[in-house]
Length: 317
Image (cartoon, helix red, strand yellow):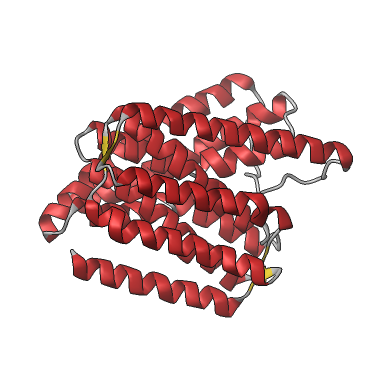
């Protein structure tokens, strides 16, 4: 039954996320929103929607360790696993702007969130501030992209791979969004319940389950997006997907979870997993600074780092 809950919940999360993204893209195209806006919605919100639903439902259901572990584990796996796999498929190039200022902003936010975790819990008012900061960051990105687009001709292709088939009628698009939300909510319930049961069966902490199974499972949309981008020769987009997703995880998902909470952060996550997340971000920025591409040996080193971290974290639990 536990396995069925995990697999069924994950399937609903992926199907619901896909339906939500397709409906959102169709509405965006219908109202002639720029490809940059569509790309930002998918990278920042669409692919991180499973993490958002799982974390909020976990906190509201009295399992805040899963919520915190989900976000921290997702950010670690986004960098050390997903970005590394994308680079193994094809070396990942990066636009210069991803280091300054976006990468440094992500590092500051990562450090700031861990400092908040030193309190032991993140109260609702701080969660609200985090959500407002995310809104400000998105506004900053939008204004900068609009100004950049005004100086250049609009690209013929969208900035990230989009689904090939989109609904043409507005009611169908709305129904897809509603169905996607329903699938995400139900899938989040099943997945969290399965994760809690698995933790009890294995005799490990809910936090470790959140850092590993839940984190990697809910990061599958990011893996799909980055993998498709690399396979299509648009590998430089993988960096943007990871940066946008990690920023949304830290400010949006933890902020919303705290609003549903308060959000308790286990001390082991603050003193072990938090520094690993910061270290993974620093490693990514180091590779960004040293060359125009993330090459395969660097990706292999990141995967090795991730394997060592998972093994050590399991030993600590």
